[in-house]
Image (tube, rainbow, N blue to C red):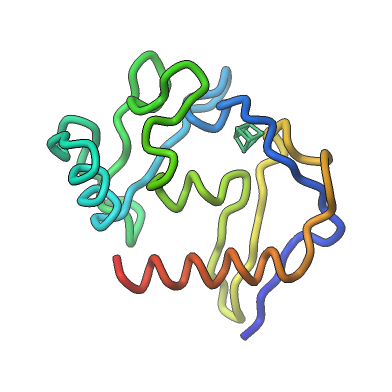
Length: 140
Ligand code: SF4
């Protein structure tokens, strides 16, 4: 299996919560798997449609997170109220996994303030993320 990833990239999350909502020039879509919506609903006791809208445009995602004032409805200040069960898209940010004709590729958003800070990510970091994505998407 061919897995491509950015080489010698440094990253350390700054806990700025910029990825939890819209930016000044671009909206942020927090896409959700059906399994994630069920887990969040069960854990928070909230009805799915109170925090998510149906959205079938990007497979395998079935919902998108609702926002309040441009920010995720579960964000309080800079704290995520569902951090332990946060969706795959939030776990991976600033990285995203794309499937191509000859394998998978990790891309990243240069807008994230954590890029170019901290330790360089290793091949094993991307392999671990890939395994996590595979496990979650398989059971979604
Ligand atoms: S992933 Fe990036 S944008 Fe999101 S909280 Fe961390 S540093 Fe900020």
